[in-house]
Each structure stands twice: as structure tokens, then as C-alpha cells.
Length: 113
Length: 115
Image 1 (cartoon, rainbow over the protein chains, first blue to last red):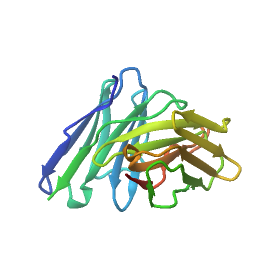
Image 2: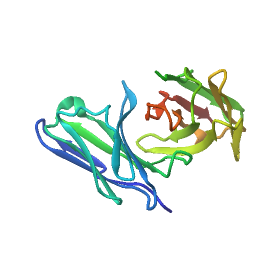
Image 3: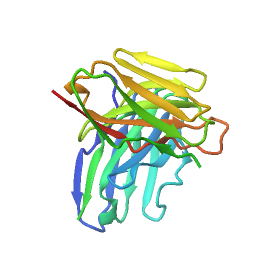
Image 4: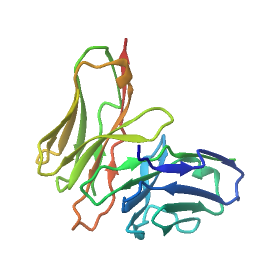
């Protein structure tokens, strides 16, 4: 069963520390999305890649967040330095083209103390 | 700017009832609309995807309809079961030619099916 894999599932860290979240999209998918979900804001798009190229990262605080796709099998989202307001669930999703369904990973639950 | 609204935020119905979840969007220029299910502590699972040229899609007990001109989509669940309890979200994708690239999600309807 093909699935999007995210690691770690949970992360607790202290304010100021660097956090790296990883995502393995479904093999063959060429679009990757990073979303953040909170009770207050719902699902917010942070970054969007197509064929490994970043197309939209306007939702991402550039001073502390960065997203990359070193290769087609790995997407990373980094926060440096982390802040308590970054506490949320971070989801990665992948798809193929614009006609196809999006498939979500199980998310990384981040708590910044 | 596209806005997606789902009302009600929460819904509780007895088992066996047929029910309809609503999704409305402000900009009718969409490429497709997708319905997702999210269980507590889990990611989103895609249920149905409707292209802008389609009127409805069906999968088992689920039927999703799309009326672009009125900016509305509905998710119909037949013969509801306790296992259908989850949060249901809709999401609209803008056209490829659009300057917008964001898939916009509604805030979801939390559905509870009472045994």
C-alpha cells in the first residue's frame, strides 16, 4: 500500500532549537505540499513543490522556516530557531499533476516549549 | 481571494440516517474539489475528487456533488455508521493558469454518529 511517510511522528523541543521534519512522498508523485494544522487556523499551506522545484512558499515565515527537496524521494522542512507558536501538526502531502488526489502523511506533532 | 466555508462545524446524528455535509466557496474558477476525512490524531484521507467539468462522484455510500456556478459542493453519506465519525474537509484547487497555487481547505465539519 503506497503511502506518504513522515518522520518523526512526535517532536518535543525547547525554544531556540532547530527542528527538521522529513517526508518521503509516494514513489512517482511529482508534487509535494507542506501544511501546518492548528485548531485556530486550520490547514495552512507552507510550501509547494512540483518536480522538486519550489513553486509557492508564500505561507512560510522565511526568517525561520526553510523547505527543500534534495531528491525526488525526500522533502524536508526545517525551523531554526523554533518558537512556541510553531507548535502544531505538520503534514506532508504528495500527488501527481493537478488532476489527481492528494495523499497525506500521518503528520509530525511538534511541541516547542 | 478564494474562501472555503463548511457549515455546520459539528454535526451529530443517529446511526442509520442519511446526511449531507456542505462546502461553499467564493470563487467559482476552480480546477477541482476534493473531500477528505480526518480521524483524530491522523492525517487526511482523500474520499472523492470532482473535476470542474463533473457534477458528481460516487464511492460506496458516499456521493459528492459540485455546482460551480453557485459555489457549492455537498457530500452525501447514506446509511451512516459509527465508523463514519470523523472530521470531513473539502478543498478547492485553483486552475493551472491561475496566479494562485494554493489548495484552499475548509475548516471541516466534525461528524459524530450515535449508535
